[in-house]
Amino acid sequence: MRCDVLVVGGGPVGCYAASIMAPELDVKVVEEHPRVGEPVQCAGLVTPRVVEMVSAQDAVLNRVDGAYVHFPNGRILELNGDGEKAVVVDRGEFDRRCASLAQKAGAEVILGKKCVSVRRDGKHIIGTIGEEEVRSEALLAADGYRSGVSRQLGLAQARDLVRGIEVDIRFKLDDQRKVHVHLGRNVAPGFFAWAIPCGDVTRVGLCVANGEGTPQRYLSAFLEGQGWSGMEKVRTYSGIIPLGHVERTHAERTLLAGDAAGMAKPISGGGLYTGMTAGRMAAETFKEAFNKNDLTEQHLSSYENAWKREFGSELRNSYRVRRVFVKMTDADLDKAGRKFDTEKAKKVLATGDIDFPTAIARPLLRSAPSILTLSPMLILRLMRR
Ligand SMILES: Cc1cc2nc3c(=O)[nH]c(=O)nc-3n(C[C@H](O)[C@H](O)[C@H](O)COP(=O)(O)OP(=O)(O)OC[C@H]3O[C@@H](n4cnc5c(N)ncnc54)[C@H](O)[C@@H]3O)c2cc1C
Image 1: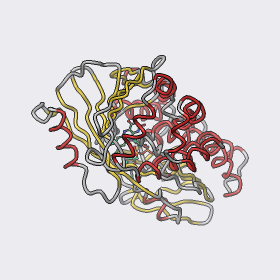
Image 2: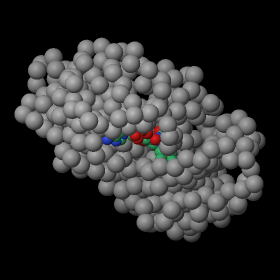
Image 3: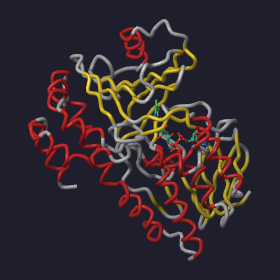
């Protein structure tokens, strides 16, 4: 088999990129699972701009405009957004929408086959898919957090990870317009727990930092604490989110995007906006590189410059916030909760954009100057963004 671009990974990033390249290039996407979008490993909370990228309005289950943030001492900050802040999607449907766009654009999506190895061979990349070899001119590694491709081609992997688990329970939250975020070392050490309203079902999950054991026992305790342990479990899913992006995401004939490049946002763990934005940029870079017949490492570096311009500083700053956050004790979190619990600060927090969470650092400091004492170095660095 031959193609212009071999995309390893039929997740949203690989398929979205394929849908943009396929009208001009011969693209093959290889996905190890027999059905795109299964198993689901996601809470499905994204900004409306992510849904718009692939016109996946059909996959939207609910729309939210605010949050309740629960602190360890019981304090709850109610954040009332000034409009729609996020939507909840059926992640399986969302991924299938991406794959169908890729197919409609002319890409071949090969399901149920694993790309077991990739190697360079002169001016080609050879991917071994099952028993067959695919000889391609270029390669997009969109193979998620384990990224075998980046390992085999000597590229780095994300610095950190969190382990997540989630369950959909048959229970209707009173307020369908707000998500709940729960903080605390006993709830979800090194991350947070969430409850997302989806009509008659509530999506409850959490992640824990690497080294904090398995998330299952925290989820059981959380469900128990909320009085939800007896509720019918509609389905359970789990997964890993890589955090701390890879600096070098290009090499000769090769680009790396999405979780394979550790592009999930370090504060929230959301990886769809950043990954798919990078997927689009990778696709555009390849199209231009094929036009100019130049797939050298130097030429492909424009991809890395593009995504770093778009959200590189956000990922760096969010990772700095994360490094401070993971060291915070429950008492520190409660102190932060107290400082943010003013009408002015809550108003600013509610204007936040989950794709660019650190963008509100400056107005937040103006609304609550005492937050400077929480971590002066961090806050001053965020001011310099
Ligand atoms: C518990 C949890 C909750 C999350 N919640 C959210 C959220 O609310 N919002 C959000 O934006 N993000 C969320 N994320 C993160 C989001 O799921 C990822 O960032 C996103 O899936 C990344 O897309 P991707 O295409 O890069 O990788 P993936 O979706 O992981 O797709 C990669 C695909 O490649 C396939 N693959 C891997 N290796 C091979 C191979 N060798 N051959 C063939 N196929 C291969 C895999 O099977 C997979 O299907 C969450 C993640 C977890 C774990």
